[in-house]
Image (cartoon, rainbow, N blue to C red; front, side, top):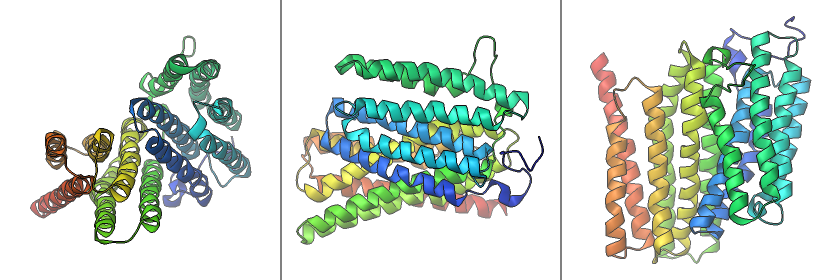
Length: 395
């Protein structure tokens, strides 16, 4: 197929793998989605609510990351691809608006938007590469089979109630999650290989980093909006500073030491598809989950600084721990390490040590929030200094 008529991105130039403005425009939809998820978790702060929100988060992430793969291959500057993204944006807004009642009165709206995005985007890609290589067409034929199978379960679950609905949707999501791990194996069509997933490494790393920024931005929005509604006194001011410093520490942990090194690794890898599959498709959802839970914790610290019940303790400690665990796996996969970063292991151990202290001493939400912020700052400083010493030693 001629370069002029192909909808694929060009390969070889430095600018060919850059994130485009229309991709950034598309990502703005997910600011709303992340906000909806954090608000939903705060409104249903129990085991059932946490499990339901986790399922919805994985669904939102899977819609976004599959689209990131597609726009890594297709050129968003071409009109058909751009129109496809606009349609997906509209469906994404409907999906996000349905999140609070996805297990209630807006179930069918949520499922229509979700399945429509997953299957519709794949059908568009198959049309876009109809004249490209057989391996590329075959790759997305397999993906279409997997997403169609999961779509059936999503739709069946919409007609169920309670546990039956939840389990049906878990099964549907499991199909989508297992697809890349199983290389989308389909009887008669074979399986894909990571060589088929010839991604622009820098583009994929940048897209995922931008999603992390979206989630961190949502956390700051929650902090600012909540602080504006409170009576301003020494306690709320302290809670506000603790929340802000916690967000700064989270930024440092990911961007100061992780994102750039990972981007360099995938850009120069002989098999960028393998890194994109593990580090960015799978591991990053844990990082996003940690940010969303931390956003809920920030609001609890601001609104109820003197009180922390069981659910509050779980959120205040669990959010940073989840974020650290995600970053630990991300850095382990994307860097030449013999093991996980020691700073993150120590940080997780300190988070675990705070659990008995929080429950036995009845620590306040503000005190717990301050403690987790100190731990996050310690992790960020430790790794930054360790990498600097390593760089000086190399010279």
